[in-house]
Image (cartoon, rainbow, N blue to C red; front, side):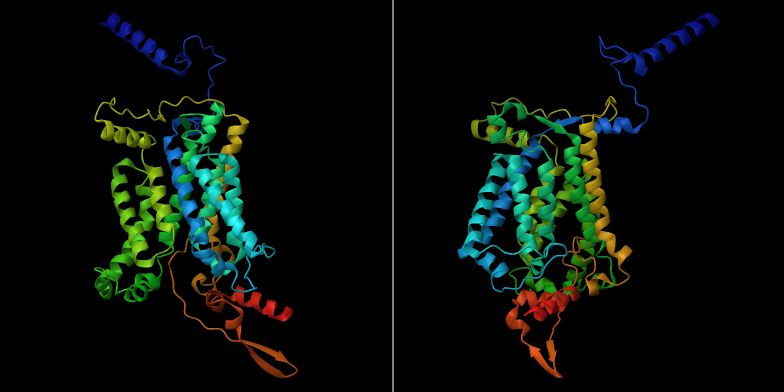
Length: 445
């Protein structure tokens, strides 16, 4: 019996030896070739560069380009009416700090510029000169954004953020004109960090949008009660907006949705629930508040949380529907496993890529909470730290402003409403920094 025990012990040791990292090298691989990590994070970094299906990023590039095409088209439609209302009804424009030098182009040049951006957005969708077009659209849309601070909207800021991310991401490696013209660009896979990068940004946006709703006004149903009562004439659902139960459903439901949905989208078990919640939320916003392209952007971004191979499944299903089930069964590309990822040395280029991604996301995490650090006041009243903080549809202000000039002991009331557009005057009346900008402008006249 002792002899049999010794034999079993010897076999167990040999088995453990066979499963040890030193003996799991590929055939023909030397000890020098096999990299042994010095710290556990090395496996995680290697996993960040594990390859997954690029189809999901190629599909999102097409959707993103078409949504941007539509956004630019809205500035061109109806004889450039949106562009005229935004930038050409007055000679004075409120500025963002540090960008006081940005001025609108002459109207005829602006028309050509908008047509140019329209073409660029289409090129992004089809993946033609993708990197160049992504850079051009990022700076072009940023320029439109910076012309007038009174036109600030959170979803315009989000467009700029996502445009920057699209520059970094290899969205043209699949289903693009670039990959057809240059086979060296062609790839069926992308590193996992690419999807982490853009998903993390969307989770940040959703989560902060929910956190900032936890305030005394929102919890008692304001300003939703005010907004929804004003829309009680909508067909079918309008009559529901007169009930407090509806108001609190939207109020508390909005908090729960925003805080949880970003995380629910990350897990397969809760993905369908998160998708259903998101479709209801965004289409309700579009119907009730008609908030531009924001619902379309966010519904399009939901596809990023699906399986990386789902666009291939969609194409296969469409072919089966057209030709009958003559196609082979769809088999998704095998996704990399963290447990099976072999640690390896990370190159300098890869380290720089991860450094850019991490730095950018840290910036996005800290920027929305800057008012807690730098301003000891209520951001809803002073507006300090309101921008770039995902404080969306959060409060409603009804203010008025009267401007007086004093000269040699005599006062004059300035007709500010004749010098500003209705939107400029409304925004200035509730934003102290804009009052100061306008006062300096008057002093220079």
